[in-house]
Amino acid sequence: MKEPPVAAPPHAPPQVVSDLLSDLASEAGSGLGRNDGAVIERSWREPERFGEIFDAYFAEIHRYVARRLDVDAADDIASETFHVAFRRRKTFEVSRDSARPWLYGIASNLVAKHRRAEVRKFRALGRLGDDGVVDGHDERVATRVSAERVRGRLARAIGDLSAAHREVLLLVVLAGLGYEEVAQALDVPYGTVCSRFNRARKKVREALGGVDPMLVQEGAVSG
Image 1 (spheres, rainbow, N blue to C red):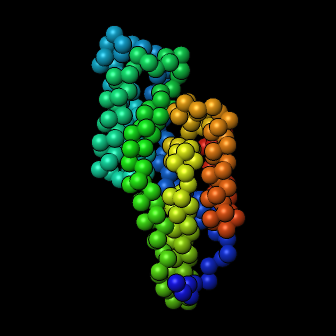
Image 2: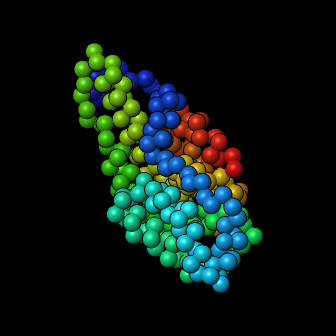
Image 3: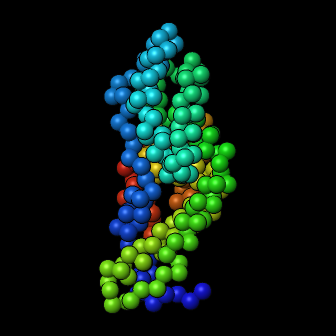
């Protein structure tokens, strides 16, 4: 396909990548501001106390699933996440302060059942901006279309990742989990998380012409 006449830079500037990741990312919730483990342990005897966990994290989990799939799927999966969590609350390690990794692990398992739909979504997003033609004299329009092309390359790269690599990448970028939290969520070794994230990061960087898409996300991965 013939490229539209837009003077796009060969490499996307970090700010463009930052903006695109911001479009994909959801803000992490603040949680309870106290010990989730103690709340969950009390819910063993007082089931209604589990509502505090729901209130603290439901909106965050819903946003995460909606970003990966769509709002309709998020309604069902977020609700099911907390149904599963409630039924399994006695398996939660109450010595842990935060229930976030545990809840994201449950949500990730449920999202995995929709893996084909997720890949289709990213690949569809990857086609955005590929066929637009703009007047190169309008700098603002040209910049916007250039950004759409980068968005498309980013989405395609994510859609082309293996399921395991995509899961780690999105838990870090969308959910804002640190490596240790991702390891807890997926029940895999810390080193496996590091390896998968680095490989995913490399593939996405190559798709963006050498720009590291995580330059502005270092705080989210240092946990």
